[in-house]
Length: 168
Length: 368
Image (cartoon, rainbow over all chains, first blue to last red; front, side, top):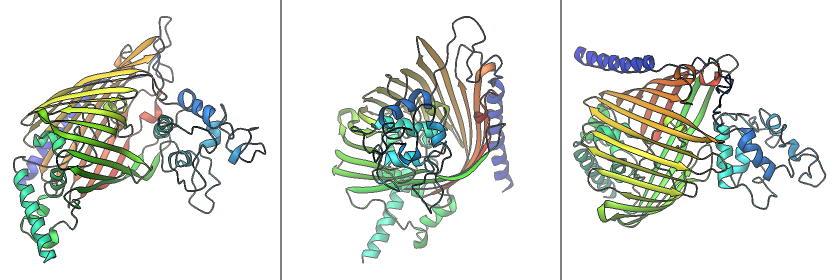
């Protein structure tokens, strides 16, 4: 029993040693001279800016603009054609994030609160429920009136965006 | 009579599996298991590069060789109560399987990045494999039953062609490097080869003897993985390229990977070089992965990983380097179940507050 315990402790020690050596050999960035996106813009030469991974502005807003804002826009037609933003959801540039993030959907009254968007959680993001399944928890799949709907790549992009924490 | 037959069938399955498994000294799932046993990924997985549904061997192995010794001994002794109560092979032609994983994640607060403590379904999938023509033509689907709906994979495969080759068409996981369970690992996340991005593709694989070579072509990317397995040593390389599409710029990635088993230790290592288009320039990045598994006794695995990401090789690592250190323990108490507890240290430049948050992950998983 004692021998076995010694073997376990020896193994764990080896494991920790390897990790410690790795951690010591490779430096973690101090961020010195880098902007908030981690790019070096402090010198006058050619600056290589790391392209954003999935962000709202770069990749998601164009999808909203193409497929969603016909109805989901202040001053849009609305689903009933009566004007206003369908569902009180405004997906136009500059308004979409505030209209999504942490805003409870009214479509699930009396149930557990569910936000339109919860960064990092597909389960808790009603936006994803509405676009990814033909049988959402309420109503119909979106976009309802777009002639082509969302492509598989567009749904995947939105999914990835939410999983990545929905960066703006 | 039928009951007696079932018991007999189970005992036969147990003995056959154990006999096969004796050729491999040890235990557990994921790439380190393949390295530890000296098998190719396709020994246990229907996807030849790993992940998703399991072969008949893989299913039997997970039931009888991953569990702790006491459970295995109970199975060996033939006590009925210790035998599995479920056989995923529904008939000679139809097999089902599943991975269902719940995780409790507690994330430490860091400046303006909030703490978070939540329970979630990190994976919920059901697999169905139908052998339409035995050992030649099969249909397979992998259906989400957790956070999202729809299929993750649906494909048909013709196999047992010359040189042990196969052709697969349909929606499938894409081959690249080690198929890790952790999609957030730098080598999977930053190369964009995860469980979250299956695609409609055509795939050809050739696996004669110790060699495995798989190449896959989708509408907007292609990738190739090749490796050689010699006893409990594996070395290989991957190459992937993507054209610009709706969710990413053009980028290329390539790199080697190595796995080796020495007694109770199994080491995995992968390094990827990434080149991403950025306007008129190209950003060069590197992602490194090292994993050491220590198996003191069957059914219990200690795991340590060290990962490093250099997000722009033109900037010194001491300014923008980033790493993740994970220590964890995994336990297989009974068939079909894994429990895990991990502590992860995330370190990055101070500007990236959310990537400097330590976390604790508790995991419960059933699989078959």
